[in-house]
Image 1: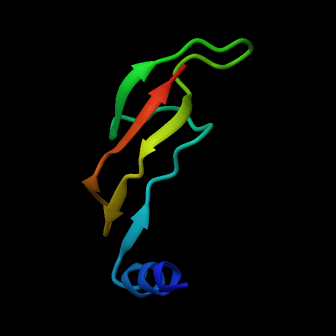
Image 2 (image 1 turned 180 degrees about the vertical axis):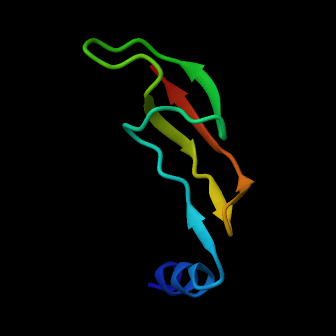
Image 3 (image 1 turned 60 degrees about the vertical axis):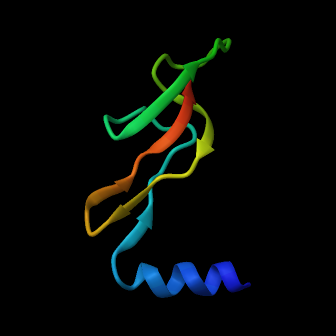
Length: 68
């Protein structure tokens, strides 16, 4: 509950999480490793290791991900 209130409050000031799982890997994601997967699109994100954030449209911390 505290986390929800905190993110809602700082979200009002422009902080947003970067969309990740299942999305194509944009340039502001840090790909830690690539994994194999059947039927998966190459370049899509398989798993999020560390969530990334943007502040007013600028990358505050890139998301660390595993990609196909």
